[in-house]
Image (tube, rainbow, N blue to C red; front, side, top):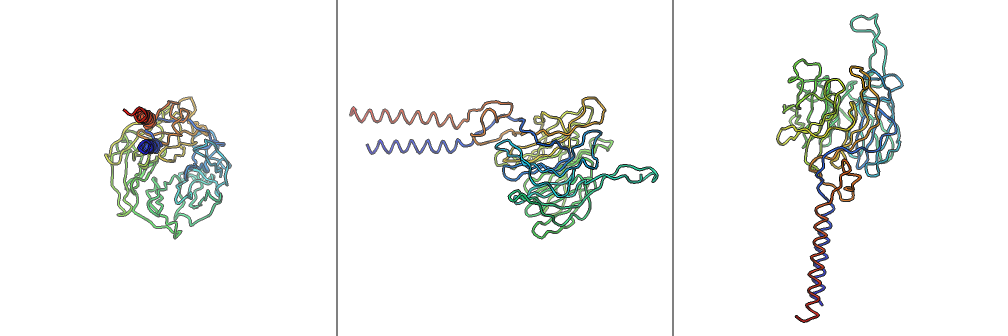
Length: 396
């Protein structure tokens, strides 16, 4: 029976290898899945991830004419989302309540830069007897440690800024302001700032991502008459401190962020999210391939919104919060949203235990190909073993 045992062990080894390989399966369905909503609806918030957790920080809880920022409406709320359990819990609030700030994660800590911290009545630049609403901006730099649920204040940015973009490359954080075109780099180890080459061109609606140590900045300037010149994509080489230009998005993207998959469980792509310019604007999802400098169109979010936060967990994307639009055209009114949607990119590979029908986009079921291989392999091994033992017993 030594040969029989050897054959049995071989079959078991083959099945084990097949089972290990079956821990990942190709998900051919690209799309969005609704997830548990935040506890507090907010727009203009910051969203970042550490491990499997997503953190939604700050923002405004005010509804009304866009952008609805009032004193008391800007909050310091910090909520943690468990992407595996699909649950939210409250965490230690950010010390400085703010909205429209830069946020990023580095070495399992979350960095928050600048933003709007209040509103004041100030003289108009045209007539100083007329008071207008102006935003109070900040340069404050606060860092959150999820492991200890504590905040720490670090060296502030060189200037007060809002709508800034934070990007981690290597051991540095690059904070870029699309409106003023400033490019400032923060060294977390030295807790110091340096000035780098500014953006070649500025705009009112900007988003940025990092792919292969290069920063991609998307410019959508809605106040430019020529739409072709209002859409730009710049690429920043941090090593050479130089900017270059790439193919811009196919159309204007308004008040939306961008995020990039890193190529581990999904192809390396840039996802520019937001809405189209116009009445009752529809959500957009433009996908950029840096290797081919080409744009394609993906499935848009199911909840059309602006000024939401976005982050990536294991090459899936989470879009959180923001403002939804009033149903009537040209109303200019928005409502804060607590929506949370997960996006599965095309070509994504995920763990089998997360390919249950409830976790797939649009609740579509998926039988992993590798699981089929395991079943067929088991049948073949058992059949071969059965005939081998029978042959030994009959002596034929």
